[in-house]
Image 1 (tube, rainbow, N blue to C red):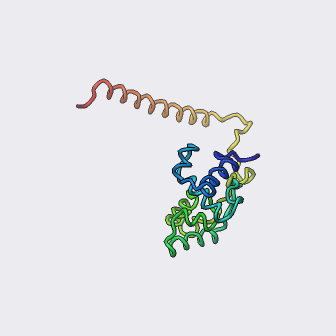
Image 2: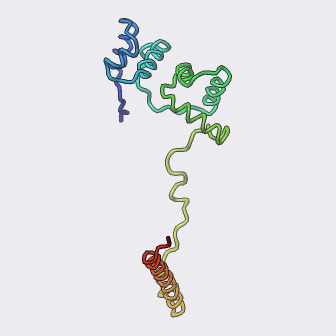
Length: 172
């Protein structure tokens, strides 16, 4: 199943060509094509760095924790912006880098490790819930169960009564 993208490849290429070949400003193209100026700038930068391949939609990539750390260290050492880092490391979505920064700040190196997808534990590992036995309850067990049910009912009625009283007599 193909991922739906907001802007297709031909649209991006057309915008980039208007900027680079026709020498229109990114602002003019953004008004002409009714898209954000920063998108135009990003597409032009990726086109300059990677050619037409830089405009192709990306399939969800998973990056190693070493790669993520390398990106974050480059940002810190060289004072790169998110856009500059994204272009250098071919990461088109700047919010991914921002998420890595937050995860690293909050959890350290463990925050950069790839997350496991799917259920954390297989269903076979879960302990089965206590199943009701086919044996009928003894008289004592029946009374204990009824006693517990009545306690719960009594607590519920007390809370309901307190709520009614609070509504009748609101404190100023």
